[in-house]
Amino acid sequence: MPTMLLLILSFISFMFLLHKVFSDLKQKKNDQKRPPGPLALPVIGNLHMLGSLPHRTLQSLAKRYGPIMSLRLGQVPVVVVSSPEAAELFLKTHDLTFASRPKSQFSEFIFYGTAGMVTSEYGPYWRHMRKLCILQLLSSSKVQSFSPLRRKELGLVVTSLRKAAAAREVVNLSEAVKKLIEDVTYMMVLGRNTDDQYDLKALAQEIMCLGGTFNLADFVPWLGAFDIQGLKRRSKKTSKALDDLLEKIIKEHEEETANVHENQDFIDILLSQLNQPISDSQSDQKIINRTNIKAVVVEMIVAALETSATAIEWVFSELFKHPRVMKNLQDEIKSIVGMSRKVEEIDLLKFNYLDLVVKETFRLYPAGPLLLPRESRDDIIIGGYHIEKKSRVLINAWAIGRDSNVWSNNAETFYPERFMNSGIELQGQDYELIPFGSGRRGCPGIQLGLRTVKLVIAQLAHCFNWELPSGMSPTNVDMSEEFGLSITRANHLLAIPSCRLSSEAFEE
Image 1 (cartoon, rainbow, N blue to C red):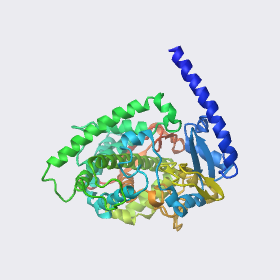
Image 2 (cartoon, helix red, strand yellow):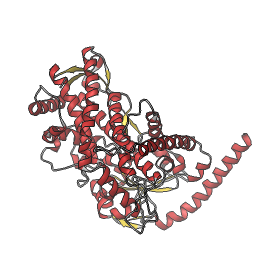
Image 3 (tube, helix red, strand yellow):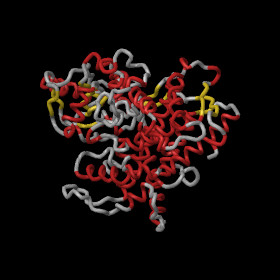
Image 4 (cartoon, rainbow, N blue to C red):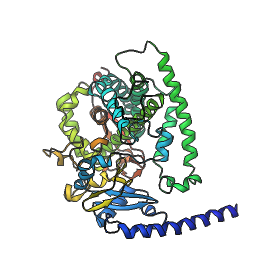
């Protein structure tokens, strides 16, 4: 063992020296062209600077080096974008150049490489899959068709919370919301609940953990052979279990020959496309196969679980911390819905203050603080800076949402009224607020996500008043965060519900 360790250390030292020589040569060539940034160390580059909350670290660095900043993470050149103006250059003006995705060990194993839509490289296949997802899975009519499902599952949560209210129990709101989003997502995507027959929830939890873990092998590729963090082994194991489970569910769908009904789940729809030709003849892949179906299914599940549950958690965190905002929201819902019934989806169009609350939450807590990374397809000059091909681009949506140059001196304050008469929307056209991304790679599920988030918030705020446990003051609500696939709360959100509506309203 000592001999092997000595060999590894010797090899690392050699690579250290070799990399420094080539890095120095390259730096002399490009120093005047690259965006400014901190000095990179040999081999590891700027990896040591990221810390446990990279979005905050990168915000601090951008204040020193500017809104277009250059880093080197291991052997990967990275450009960090931290202002609305710069974001527009990358996501709109030069969107096509940055329309591809970098490869990672996680996406290779869990998302079937480039077989899906989210992580695939830009090209004819990606265009076809995105079109398929938008028109068949995420269209307005499809989102609306799942309204009864959302109503039913949310009703079960309300019933559970009502029992807790009667007993004056402390509720783990984080867990309640997470389970709700899981149940809705699995029924929508798979057409079945996973509690009994399947162990998908445990697999999903491992997937979230793997996706939120920083993988050194993605940035220093030669370390991949050593699997120092054990992530490759875990990813392989999870990928095999996930594939077996999805194959079982897909076969069950195929055997259900009478499963041609009005509200088809995502697998039903994707199976109808199986072996169908891809319209663009330039694509190397000619048909949709089972691997493509599995990849899209996993992407849909992960996207829904991460974004919706996280957003709802942060909304209620801020509502508990700011009783004034909670009261304003409850008053609006009461004035429109009354106190004799629960909120219905059709009511959502009438809630103006709810829209302000949701926008303000996404401003401060975008589900993906650095969005999903993009990769440059060619060398390009932007803002006078040379950005080389295969550079990874990170859009720090978290930093943009807290930029005092954009949001004034109270940029860190939760204040929904800032959006009154502002005209700023969440669809990706206003670069001050881009939690769902923008351009070709913008999130296609924004309509579904917003519908779900708004309905859950409105229902839980309307049905219940909420009291913090142990006499806690609103100013003491823990807002600690944890970085992963999204920014989640570091600790669960706990509160005691009490019923606001009459018994008849709950029993409708």
